[in-house]
Image (cartoon, rainbow over all chains, first blue to last red; front, side):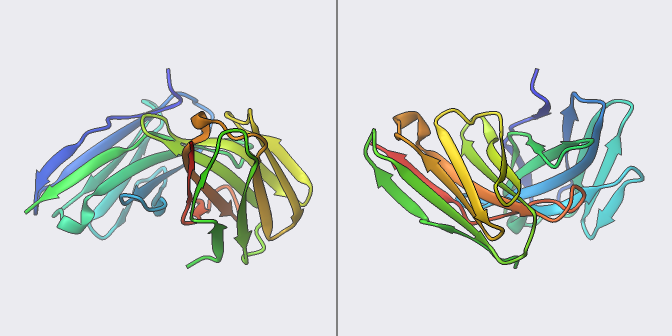
Length: 110
Length: 112
């Protein structure tokens, strides 16, 4: 089993739709969690950290469920510019090494 | 944007030749990382550094070596390139475990 798993998609959604991605992790000692966005042929860029209490940044909401060992990303009112691959990232306590999921591809359609 | 640059951006090399990729940062961060990204595998850690002359292996370190003689530079060397090392290589830095990585723009390496 991979340490971090994501549905590869693609998720094809119309503009204005709400879409949610989940990411599961296997190590219960995981400490920090992030969502990254990666555009085609570009480097990953930090979208948002994921906090235990959940956090929101504009149209984006991230949540953590430690009991079930998953994190989620909700995008409301999808824009064409949201089309990208979204990477789930997990770190383990006591290490600076990050474990990346393989990403979920989102296509927002006009 | 954070000061991290990679060079070269693109390289084509022949099997069996040595190749060195460079990562340069101006953020004075202690931690630097080399990842490779391949379809179906995502980003995989090759080596990382936690200080000058302090490096350690990641999950896919075979065939790669690294050096860090200065805080700002982290070099990745393929001693004898193979076709399986054709990939996109990303360097990353971070200032702390809760801060997230900042990535360089990547090096697209093709071994023919």
